[in-house]
Image (cartoon, rainbow, N blue to C red; front, top):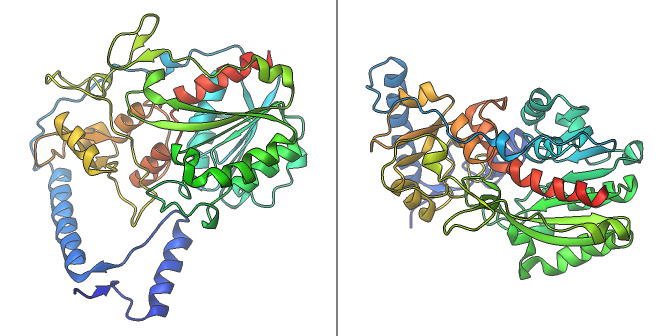
Length: 399
């Protein structure tokens, strides 16, 4: 059997030290042990990639694709609603998926909390709304939520890694489980409504007891709680992505008025009264090759064994991207950089603005940080049009 090793660790204490150091850099990072053969393969691939990037920067590679002009404008999926009087409070804000959706639905944020400094800065630049607490100040643990008592709505997406397959599904045993903090915030601010989102796996049988005991029962003491499942493509997002949402109302009459957001778009067979969701190629303004599809679910580049610039999350997703002739690895920071660095197989190389479009963000949303950090913010986010849909339904119930 091949020996398992880390680059500089030769003992259990050194391995633990490497893991601790990695966690200090990024709380979502999950290092793993590799065999010597696996590590050598990664080294060869990294060296080849570095050589290719160097050649691209030196202009030694010939572009094979024109610069694309996206056909989809996500703002058109989220018509700006009239601004409401009540304020919103955002937790686990990330790069701003829910915040943008709620803002377009008429909610103004009093404050947003986000642990990653780059993500908080993205939100600060993109929305410029209320106070944005980032870094240590964005840590929701220990916040005195009484200061925000009286906000109309609290929304957020506690980290999904404890319940996702990519995050190893440790649930309540995962130190990244922040559901207790969200429940604590709601109980102390007492908003008229709250919205919490997560991966569909949270609604599975595996976590049924946890959901009942740690989320629904505590909140049900003062709120009527409903659980809904939304699909991104139903709201015009060119990606197959599902999210489970918990929606709660303090007043029975508001809850009675609430209806889950109705789909506005369709993918596949035409449905009367709905608009057609564009496929990934069409949304990005790429030439028609005779085959198009929804983008597979975009993975967060901040979760997993290493930070990466690949949005690929499975072998099945790889097949879909290949059929669409889109290269999901080595995403470039700009379209110009992507064009100058042709993929070896000739497929279209994605850029950060392209991935943003596939997630339902406007292509000019000012994501801050290195390329992997920008992609992580995109992959972790709720597609803004999906957030807009649920926010609009909540706003109608609170009218």
